[in-house]
Amino acid sequence: MRAYIIKRLISLVPVVFGITILTFILIHMVPVDPAHAYMTATNTPPTERAVAAVRAEFGLDRPLPEQYFTWLGKALRLDLGKSYVSQEPVLEELKHSFPSTLLLTLAAVGWLILLALPLGFLSAVFKDSIVDHLSRAFTFVAASAPPFWLGFLLIELFALKLGLLPVMGKGSWQHLILPSLTLALNYAASYTRLLRSGILENLKQPFILYARARGLKQKLVIGKHALKNALLPVVNAFGMSFGYMLAGSVIVENIFAWPGLGRLITESIFNRDYPMIQGYVALMAVVFVLSNLLADIASAIIDPRIRIGDDRVGV
Amino acid sequence: MIGLGFDKFLSRFVKHKAAVLCLFFVLAVIAGGIFAPWLAPNDPNKIELKLKLLGPGGQFPLGTDHLGRCILSRLLYGTRISLGSAFLVMSFSLTIGTAVGIFSAYRGGRIDNLLMRLCDIFLSFPSLVLVLVIIGVLGSGMVNVIIGMILVQWLWYVRIIRSLVLSIKERTFVSAAKVAGTSDMKIIFRHILPNVLPQLIVLSTLDLGSLILHFSGYSFLGFGVQPPTPEWGAMIEEGRRFIRSAPELMFYPGMLITLIVISFNLIGDALRDVLDESVT
Image (cartoon, rainbow over all chains, first blue to last red):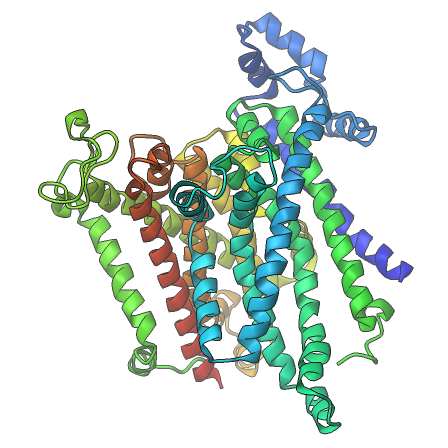
């Protein structure tokens, strides 16, 4: 198991470096250089002298690799620099916004499980029944509609017409329901499909036939043997989806005026607040690696073949 | 080889009735965009505050928005940007991806290795974040969003095309061509490209749907199309302030995006089925 985790780390950690280096190169390659962006953000007139002073202050006159390693060294000590706009440390701003986004994403994960598990399971077990047709119609619409539009439809229905839930903002637990559902719908659709096809695929396998031949109850056969095996790709894909959902909150936060990372990064992009953008990307990369690692560990726990890394056991 | 003539292909495709219906819908919408100047009943950008938020009927078949602009005309003109941008992103990244992918798979070696490492790093990471970074650096605007999307998208095609080419490269007809002394260029264009093309068509059809969704998302965030240019995602964004008084402002463009994306997905699925049948 330890060897397996180390192996996964070796392939995951380069993502953090690759993504931050790319961001770094992009920021330093474009027409509006960081010094000018800083002057615009702080409303200082960009005179020759002022620009030179800013360059020297931020070390922008140094060679690019040196700048990256300086940034990396500081980042490892949790110093991500100061926001151009608010002059607050980037880390403080991220710390302030991250919990809201994390809460939103975790609630969305809750919806995902609540929707995709029963829908995928029922539509596989009762294939071609009315349940199956309804669930497939749901997955088609939820996967094809723009998430921001779905969000507004939900607001229209549950907040305005029925008056059951608040329209936007953050506060009580009721505020969490619609944004997290909006964030989850797209993923719920693809996971329902993944689970359905996984169960159907597994039901064709010889071990299911064997379990049936042994006279095991149908419920046990489907529940224990087919479902457990069908969950594997789901758990695996989930590590990646978590990062995608965390990123996807950008749109949801803008619909529901949810004060999280997404709103912070949209503002930072409009202001060309480069240290914020760089910090956001670094945070996303780290979270991404962690969630993938957790998913890998979870699938290793479910499936001993992965843990042992022995091909003879599998397939 | 995919020895499927056009007649046979067509006769198999029309069996997928839903996909045929979707194809007609997509073609109708595209035609609506192309012929917008003749079809649109009004100037899409003409502001007439006296006529704001009118219901459907008369001069305005779908009513007017908060500035008194004709919704139907804006939807028709919006097609050009919403679909056009997706086609643009798709064709650019497909062309670059195909060229690089074929080269990488055919030559192998160090460049191939480097490209695959790049794919490993960037393809697993949420593309939304990457595009946002590119927009953050280049600045917002439609062209920059399209550039950002192409920069992220092309690597996808490299990886897929590379694996397709690798599987064909070892087939007998390619070896035979090599032994016969055919030049690399000719092998690529005469033997390899025609064999990966059908799969590429399926892939790009399925991708078009998600590209449309993404592009409208960036417009919704305010990064893409700037007002008053009509675009579906931007129309939803403009309509959001009137969700209480005039929810239909958001309803029409959202419905249109959903239907178009569903259509592309169904067409792509049907094409894949037809291809699979012809292989087996």
